[in-house]
Image (cartoon, rainbow, N blue to C red):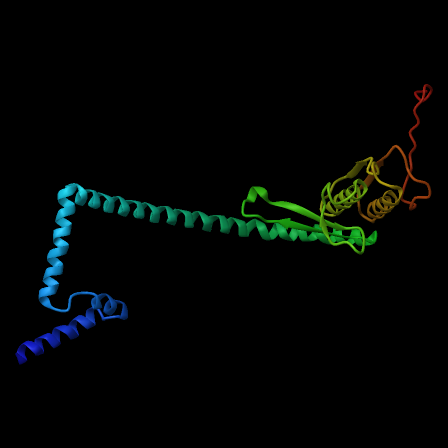
Length: 248
């Protein structure tokens, strides 16, 4: 008896080393039979239920094993595809890190000029890069404020008047010109749809921008101009007349 007790103690210690008896296992063991006879009866009962299921559907074990193989195959496929996906995501991030900082730096230069021109007319404007998850949906957002009590709002047909949109568009184009080099620039009828106040402000910004040293020629074509506009000695006005004798 003592020898058996020592052997049981040794085996229990070895079992605890391999698989410690956690609180979860103790809870499971608490509902199991406490004697060897009751445990044998529970085992026989479980075997009987399994044999009953097998006799009812002889293919149940075969189907179970087939499902296990399918699950293993799908898990292996999923692991491989997940690895490929992670590799593609890493490539996208690597390429994104090559062009996105340069794009953001360019947008910051445009935003600086755009904000400066808006401030010169007593308003507020800014340029932002819209960066959704899909690259094909990237875009530039123009936000403007024409009145002190207003908040910055996206430029669209619902929030601003036609004249305000024309002013914003023209100042954005002027801001873009600071980044491009060309022999001359030509703008056609920029004052169409503007009220006299906005037209006067935009004309002054165009003149100030076009008459800076080292900049290319600037042609402004318009069917009409307001009186007493802001001109500098660098501005030349050419009036084109149309009539039956103009060809002579």
